[in-house]
Structure formats: C-alpha cells, structure tokens
Length: 81
Image (cartoon, rainbow, N blue to C red; front, side, top):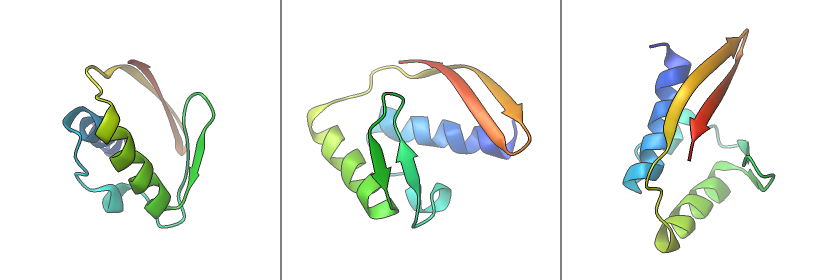
C-alpha cells in the first residue's frame, strides 16, 4: 500500500472510530477541505471543529474504499458511504 493510500485510510478510520487519530499529520495548517457535495472548510482548526461537531450528532457506520486511482501527485478514491 502506498503512502497516499495509508493517509486516506487513516482519514476514513477517524470517521469510523469518531476519533482524531492524527489530523495534524495528514493536513497542513492551511488545508482547504472540500466535501463531495461542495461544503468547504479552510484551515486545520476549522476542519477539526467540523469533524468534532459532526461526530456529536452523527456516526459513520460504513465507509468502504472500492478502489484508488493515482495520476502523478493526485489520488482519487471510489468509495461506498
């Protein structure tokens, strides 16, 4: 498994376990995170707040990775949520 796939799996695991297992290790302070349906969160503090707040009222039950697509410095994930 390559490093990008490990990072993505860690991010999915955080949601499944409802725990920050190292966001500081996978995102920079100036991260811009855009959800699949368009909401955007700018900076690490905002991403952490969104993650923590969302997990007070919701729970990810399943988030399976179907496949990865790699091209140069980009990775796309096909997943089931």
